[in-house]
Each structure stands twice: as C-alpha cells, then as structure tokens.
Length: 114
Length: 244
Ligand SMILES: Nc1nc2c(ncn2[C@@H]2O[C@H](COP(=O)(O)OP(=O)(O)OP(=O)(O)O)[C@@H](O)[C@H]2O)c(=O)[nH]1
Ligand SMILES: [Mg+2]
Ligand SMILES: [Zn+2]
Ligand SMILES: [Zn+2]
Ligand SMILES: [Zn+2]
Image 1 (cartoon, chains in turn yellow, brown):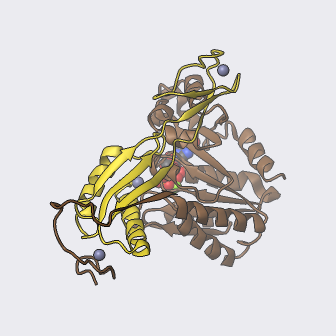
Image 2 (cartoon, rainbow over the protein chains, first blue to last red):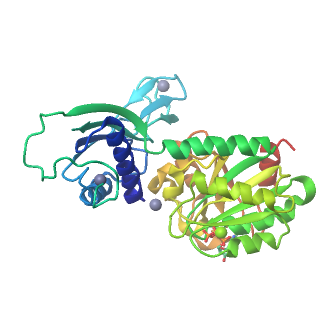
Image 3 (cartoon, rainbow over the protein chains, first blue to last red):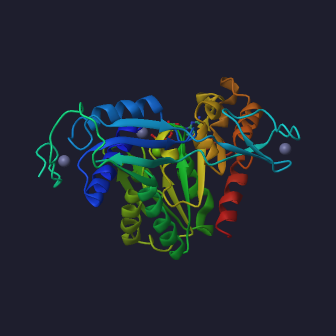
C-alpha cells in the first residue's frame, strides 16, 4: 500500500494543528486504523518512524495505533456482532451472511503537543 | 522559520527528547479521517457527475484482468443506446486512452506519475478535461478505469456511484480472500476471461460463494470479452444503472 503517503498526510496535518494551537513539539499521536482499511500497521509505524525524524516538530514523537473492531451485522436477525475476526456465522441465528459495518477508516484521534 | 522543513513555526527550544514534557503539554482531540480531504472531493465529483446527468462506475482490478478490453467491447456492443465517456488511469502512457479513442467515444488519460491509485482530486481534474472533449459533457455513463492494482484503489472514493472489481480466470479464485477490501467496497464482481476456463482451475461457483461471504450484497457476473459469453447480463446491468 501507500503507507508512506498516508504518513506524509498525517505529518502535514500535525503541522497545521501545531500552528493553530501555537505549539512547537508533538509528544504523542494516537491513530485509529480500522482492520478493513487496507493499511499495514507495521508499515505505517515504520513510515512514521522515518518521516517524523525529518522535522523538529515531530522528531521523537510517539505513535500509538489502536484498531477499532469491525461490527458485523447479521442479514438474518439484524444482530450486531463484534469480534476480532469475522465470525463464520451469527451466534444468535446461525445465519452465515454477515455484512461488515465500518472498520475501514484511518482516523487521527488525538495529539499531545507542547 | 524552521531550517529543516521551511515551515514558519517558531521552534523556541531545539533539543532532543530527554527532558520531561510536563510544561505546556496539551492534548488535542482531533477525530478526523486522513481520508477526509479525498472523501470531500469525491462528494464534489459525485455531485458534478449527477449535474451532468451521468452515472459513474469505477473499475478496479490487478494489471491485465481485462478492464480496457471489456470497455472496448462494451462500447462496440452498446452502440447508440448509451453515451459513454471514459477516464483512464495509469501510472504511465496514454495507451489505454488511445484504445478507447479508437472506438469513437470521449476519453481522457490521467497518469499518476508513480502513484498506485487514482484519487478524487485527479479525477476532478479529469472531469473538467473530459467536458472539453467533443461530446464529453453529454454522457449517460462515465467509466473510470483505475490503475491496475487490487489493493490501493479500494481505499479511495473517486465520486463513483458503483464500484466494479474484476478478477480474470488466470489469476485464480483466491483473490477475494486475499484482497478483501476491494470486494467489500464494491457493488459488482466480474469474473473475466471465462473463455479460458478450460485451461485453468477456476471453480466459478466457489469464487462466487467466497466473494458473497465477504460481501453479501455483491452482484457477481462472469463473462468473456473474447467470446461474448455473459455480455447480455453485463449490458443489461449498465442500462439498468443508467435507467435506459
Ligand atoms: N482470453 C481472453 N483474453 C482477454 C480477455 N480480455 C482481455 N484479454 C487479454 O488480456 C490482456 C490484458 O487486457 P487489458 O484489457 O489490457 O487489461 P487491463 O485490465 O486494462 O490492464 P491494465 O490497464 O494494464 O491494468 C490483453 O492481452 C487482452 O487481449 C478475454 O475475455 N479473454
Ligand atoms: Mg487497461
Ligand atoms: Zn499504494
Ligand atoms: Zn442472526
Ligand atoms: Zn518546522
């Protein structure tokens, strides 16, 4: 994938935020990267480690990645199923057609700056 | 001004990260998608396309699954019943656009210069260029052929109304399982080059079932641009989404 260009987009956004809040140093960044986003977490972390070094604003900043679970919706009984990986069938009614809901976004949640 | 990046931040203290950060630290809740800018532009594109009176499809597949060939045959077969315009996406060259232009429909080639996918900003540029082509502002169906890549294009909404993912018979039936995002985000799954079924081990029904397992709403079709098998369903589908 293009994790590097996503990280570059994140760094641009951090610069805008720093300017807006009059801060000069990013201490930590929290990202929520959905399991269906197609982003490889290790590559994103690697890209951040490299690109954040290039700039005093982000040098030494910590990146925390969380991953909100996908919610699956049962096509039979409309139950919401929340599990690590896609379940084979609905625990309530055994239906196997389950629709994913969400889990595909790449969200900047929170930044700590000084 | 900062020497290393040219930004106009005033870096009051230059230091490495050894001191504690208790002074002035602030937590900012952002909750914004890194894809927000692309999504906003995609919404603009969709509105623009609707104002033109057209419906747009985004075709996604690995390199060589037969996207351009399917388009060529579709333009031939559909004749005057749909006015088709095309935006071609490739990393380099305008070869695909030249193939489409030879079929006599308005077409624009976008080259990404290395990027592995089209994004909404590029397509926005393409829309304006297409409108300047003869007939480019009088379309029923706008086809966007994405860069050949089954991974990255799935992340980027271009402003299309329907997304179509193709897998050709020689690629094998395991693609939905290996590249789920493209199948989860699409409305149609086309198994292409079915004329080659006698030469490859490609259980069509298994591939169909596996894709439906990922995305129960997928419409699955199989066809061959070479033999014409399955074309009727495909053309009916296109006329259906354009309500013609
Ligand atoms: N046997 C067979 N070959 C096909 C069929 N459709 C396309 N091909 C061949 O597959 C090759 C690639 O076809 P293209 O249409 O250029 O594929 P594409 O998906 O547009 O490729 P990129 O734009 O490079 O990603 C060509 O040699 C085509 O002749 C088909 O239905 N049957
Ligand atoms: Mg092509
Ligand atoms: Zn990519
Ligand atoms: Zn159920
Ligand atoms: Zn700077």
